[in-house]
Image 1 (tube, rainbow, N blue to C red):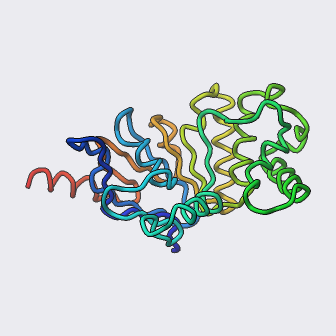
Image 2: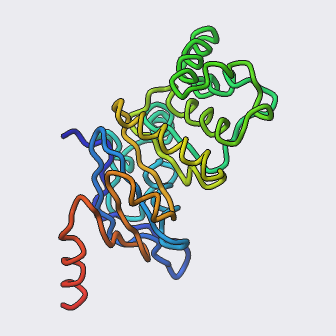
Image 3: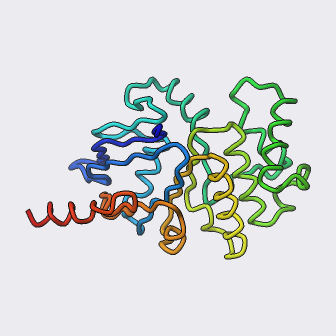
Length: 238
């Protein structure tokens, strides 16, 4: 299998004296996987999100996105990796109220050199793929919360990224809208999109194909590695 994301013995420290937010994280996500990273507040999820999304660099260890070592990259190259290889979906939709859905989605292509006509064509295709082909000229205030999140997902996938990173994507939605978004993510994954979803919702995580639990800056379980918990217990005893 081809890896999309790899973290090797990654730590992240802040302050002086340093406080470790992440402590020796090892994680690999292969092409086509749908992974939930679940943990309570303060577990290190946000720090891990920032490292996966190349918004931050590790204090030690290495992060690879589609085979590229993040710590070796210039700021310009790092921005290019973020722009072309990673799509972001956040709890808050971050849509421009003054723009139509087409232009909101097309904004995801602003720095790719694609002309406006092609940006709008690609945006229409992305919106149709998330079930919003009938809302192309609507503005965010005319949409439900679930529809706005689907616009945000369309904006994230319009560049056809190697990795879709979803941070609490159902956190601001009611249960019905949240379920619609989860089903959409499942469909995108079935079509080949690699997805990492960050959540504190264990019930949601349990419904996804792979579950990685983080606590106190450590990965404490991984459904793809059932023996991990035993190794951690043995290490603690030793």
